[in-house]
Image (tube, rainbow, N blue to C red):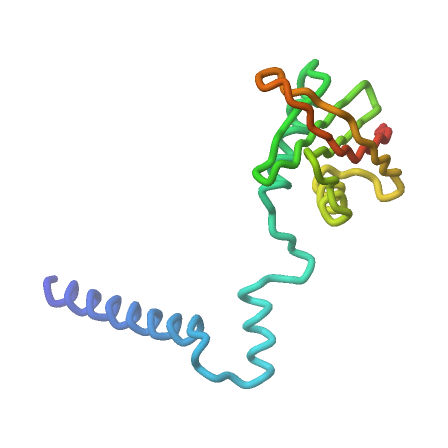
Length: 154
């Protein structure tokens, strides 16, 4: 019985060494491979081209939408790390996404990224405006630049 257990342990050990060696060969980027193998390797490691990496903004957008759809809440506000302020508002089937920042207007790139994250239809018009805002503590006024989008969902 002890000999049989030792033999099976040895077989398991040899198999695990082979698996580890095989895995080390497969996962090592330093070993040159033939071109046809590189293509399958890239597909294996990166996935397909359609796979989209989930960003922090996508997670924030999903949370904000979830807060509005499950409750009677009418709007949700979030301020991002770089100063971009986001307001998502819902009134029955009408939605409004407002992107604002002090002193600098949101860039076209930021608007497109937010539009994709929040699921704003492509044909939605973006209205740009600016408003003066007074800080209640310091009583100073700043210029707030806003990009506003409104659309209807069924």
